[in-house]
Amino acid sequence: MSKFLALFVGLCCAAGAAEPSADALAREVAGLGWIAFSAATEAGDWDLFVMRPDGSGRRALTDTRAYSETGVRFSPDGRRLLYYRQPAKEPVDNNTYGTFELVVADADGRHPVSFGTGSPWASWSPDGRAVAVLKQEGIQVLDVTTRRVLRTFPRKGLVQQLIWSPDGMRFTGTANGLGPYWNIGCLRCDAGEIRAVSETERYNCTPDWTPDSRHVLYARGIVPSEGGRAELWQAAHDGSERRMLYAEAGRHIYGACASPDGRYLLFTRSEEDLGRVDHKRTTLTIVRLSDAPMLGDDDGTLRQRFPNAKGCLRLDLGPGWEPHWTAAAGGVVEPFMYE
Image (tube, rainbow, N blue to C red; front, side, top):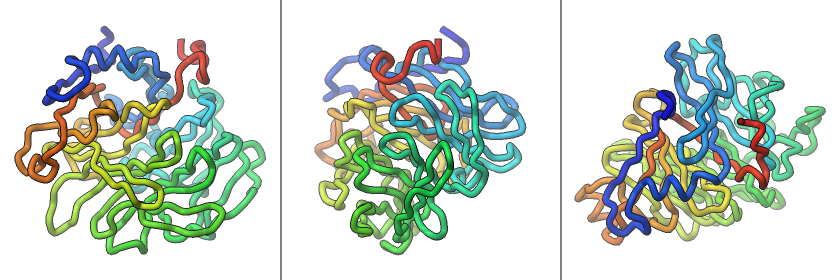
């Protein structure tokens, strides 16, 4: 096993899980495409990496020392990436990475093209031919090839972490104006109507869509006066059907996304409340959606709040942050791109 693999398989509270070992979970997800993410290097900057969902095949997509690369997302066809590039001297922060220089590249990291610093919080269009960005004047849709503005939608309070739904009908993102803190909003493209997906009386952040465009995954955060840990929750696009998916007393949960088949969840576990990201305290983890709701540790307070939650089988993939998952080789991503 490569010394750079950093594959740690964690088994926590395995009662109630469908399989008895994390090795079994690793075998289930091994062929389900690729995961891209950011991780810190020994030089102190952040580069982009890719690996199989079982942790194998890990390799760098970027190798820079003057810059840090963050916020990577595969295009819907899996053949390109967008990400953000910032000076290495600038601290990597969960709330600001999408305000730096937007770059679009091939899925293997080659042929990077800079869009400059005027395209914040970019998200791919469903057909992969355009990106939506959160400009002051609205959500602008830019043609990737020509950079021409194709359309502008009202932003309705969306301020960061913009994600376009796979069916093209809605945007989700972190929003102001829906409550006293940051919350998760869902904006209908056709009507310009925004709704709160999350509860509005606490901080919430890092949303993403499930593959069927029916639900939003997000980090249900804290009330500042009460403390606590961010948890992984899900809700329908109209704010109904809210439920906890994964929580643990020892870590905050951020930046979740679903596997392309919707059966697994990939997220960042952090010892610290982000803000500023410390690579030594952020790790990537995969769990089965079918195990939800689940608890990642044996905590009495969480058990009181979620008495019906299962224990969970957890596949820990080592250091990383803000991951994204694309479809299986042979379906979308060609093997030669990484072999």
